[in-house]
Amino acid sequence: MTSADLRTDAPAIVTRNRWRDTFDGTLPEGWEPTMSVSVIIPAFKSKTLEFTLASLAAQDYPEHLLEVVVLDDGGGEEPVEIGEYAHPNTRLIRVHEVNDGWGRSNATDIGIKATTGDIIYWVDSDMILFRDNVRQHAKWAHFIPEAATIGDKGFIEEWDYTPEEVYRKVLDGTIADDYDRSTLHEHWSEEIYRKTDDLNDSHGRNYSTHMGACASVTREVYDRTFGQDTRLHLGEDTEIAYQLWQAGAVFIPAHDALSWHMGRGTVQDHAAKVSWHNDVHFAQRMPIPRYRRRAESRVWEVPLVTVVTEVTAETAAWARPAVDRILNNTQTDLRVVLVGPWSELHEGRRRMLADPMNELYLVREWFRTDPRVEFATEAPETVFPSPFRVDMPITAGLSPESIHEMYRLIDQPWLGAIRFFTPGHDNDDAVTIWNSAVVARARRYVTDELALEDVVDRIAGFEWASSERAHLFDLREAEDLEAKVVREDPRVPRLEKDLWRMRKRAEAAEQQLREQGSLPRQAARSLNRATGGRAGRAARGTNRVLGGAPARLLRRLRRLVTR
Image (tube, rainbow, N blue to C red; front, side, top):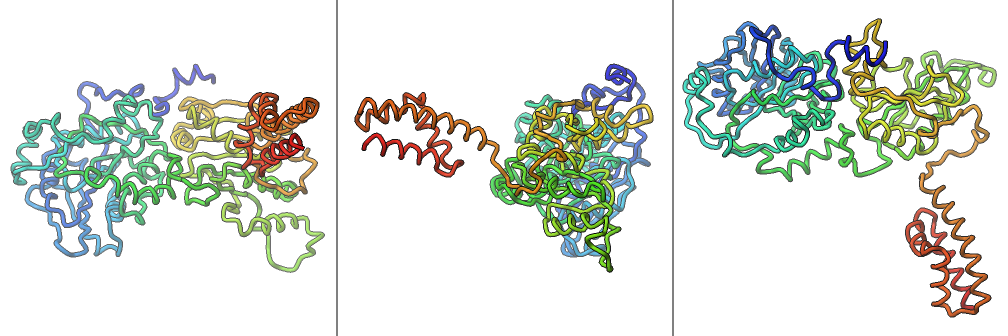
């Protein structure tokens, strides 16, 4: 089946994050929802919960398809209660009666696990949802299985409501008339929507717009994640949004899902402090965006790239040099899953030198203390939530810049996968880098007729590239397997070549200066001209990388010409 066939016969799969090409929000005439919705409301000593519940009581979503779960996170102090105006399918869970955890993430986790709705909709306890809010969120999931929607909210700072008034106004639709949205605070996400054509052009990178105040996702996608990170007590909505992205979510601003946010947002008044606090936690868990990880040669909780390679007793001789070269790449934000028959190794008596498995014992010992190497007996189906996966044979050799080049080639255009022609290996065994978010979405659509590669190509492109693009070679042909493997700055070979050319020009300039008997200052100028003006610049630019060699060369030349 060709790519052209895929585009005409395949199911409606969202390409990249271009949701509008699949479903633009226009409903068929007479459409009615069929998917159930679980609304999750964490509440901490909330004074506005009664308004949120009243607005949910007036929703136009089918009653039998909607449930509301309130999580009282107050630890028994100032307990919240379900008031007179609430949806019939509303229940209350006291968090302190369930576990010893605390915080929004912990409460949300309890609520999600206590529900079964096809759509999970988390709502803050200071929101007033307009009458069709739930319907406007839920409609997207009916047409896009990976839908993760973000509703629109207006921030109101003064109100004079009672729960009954909220219920009546939501029911008759007049709640929208109480404030002029154009005069209210504009949330920072609106600017992102404008720049990305409502996230159509974002490829999911703007996952941070999927915030907990009023956001939904299909349970199908949520179940692919690790769930709420209950260790977090700020920024938990951004962290789960990152997980949803890596699980294949399609992020959609549901502009018709309107609401009032009662009070100012936390970021409005404490943006710098919130960012200062969250960035540390985000850096551990979210490799993208890259600016948060301001240190190299670190082991992070979630690596940017996970390399999966398999070793057997027959190929074990290449395992140590292969994995050493992976770990010594200039892209240090990585982890290696080394798949092998590790369960067959034992601590009993054996003839070590004659044991055909002995090299595997040595491989295990070689990497035993490196936290970046994981020993596995089977290849993982997914490396979630690591955003990129490299599958490679153990006999493929990597150069110091290979991982970074592969990452650069797939990330800049945001492709689904790139497979590299690998010297000494057939195409089925070639080195391949995968975009994890694309693969997660693609798996749902794999059939006997549509292979994973076909669906990945449909979503974001599947390309082939030469081995030179990733600096690959056949490790079995290498002559220096016993040589020490060191991490080499990829700039060094180029700068060394430049230095060699400079030396040749400098030698010629030195000879010319000796013949002319020039003064020192004239000599320096002549040397600079002879090297095309590069001597000074190169000495400054490469001195650190080459251990001071250019500077020493220039000093030697100056001594010679002043003798």
